[in-house]
Image 1 (cartoon, one colour):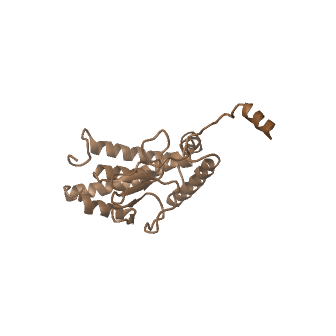
Image 2 (cartoon, rainbow, N blue to C red):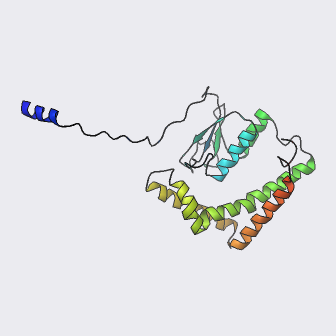
Length: 223
């Protein structure tokens, strides 16, 4: 036994290899029990915002509204608390602990920071609805098409971004599942998918938005 012990002590210690953690929890806010939390689909390493369009939309809306909150990345895109009727990201847990999604988030903002459209005239409100409809249909359809439906863009851009979110091979499996789900949704919106028609609609929408914005910082008013 002594001989084995001496041999073991004479051998060099095996190298210790350390790896970065798979996930590092973000810093907690000053008052975590009261600070609202917006749960979003994760961002890739090269992005500052969420990769998911809906998550990005509400990130921008909360920041633009000066609504005090923090964000949390959620890797389960089709899961959310039972209080969220949509069952999808993003969702907001307000200071009362309620899980809100969609229009409920907008209601929360109106209650806490006021109605951002309050200064708009009736004509401007109608224009907002019209431009919003164009963006959420024609422009959004074009974005979905080029990110998920188009094979080349999916492999070069979308799949590459999702590789940073999960370990292999889960990243490939989930990215392709998301592509399948998104393509199914697109076909429900447009049974006949025409690249030329989608591109023409997107160009027309961008031209209309550019004309409306002109040289101003905002589409309507000074804020």
